[in-house]
Amino acid sequence: MEDLKVVNNWKAAEELERFKQRYLDPAKAKVDEARKILEDPLYKWRKDEKDRAKQKFAILDTKNIDYHRIYAATMELIAQHERQTDLLTEIYSLWFHNVSNKGKQPSEMMNMQADLLQSYFQRIFEAVEPLKLQLTPTSK
Image (tube, rainbow, N blue to C red):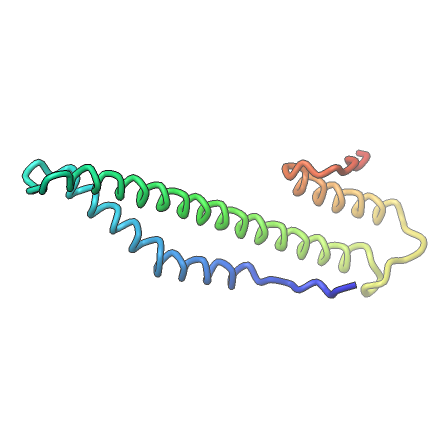
């Protein structure tokens, strides 16, 4: 089985921001400039030039919208990854310090430890529930 590679969400966000600065921001500026020209009543158009410009603008604007949608969805995914990583880290720390015996799960647990474990897994379930995975809810 192949080892899973852990991806740092900050690195992905950093690369996505670099992509935005390098490609998306200039594309948006280009669309804004083209829109100004198209809407300028004083601009001197040659014969049939405005119709071709409108067609080119429509293509450029559609691509720009699509790229920004992908960017926004990816940023949202990165933020979700960050929240879930934080949650798992917190729950691991709680288990390690409140339930385990120096990182080893005791074979016999006290009621308090069982209740703590139950609450940790309930939190994990609640965190992933919006993803609509086929998981059986924890018993309360």
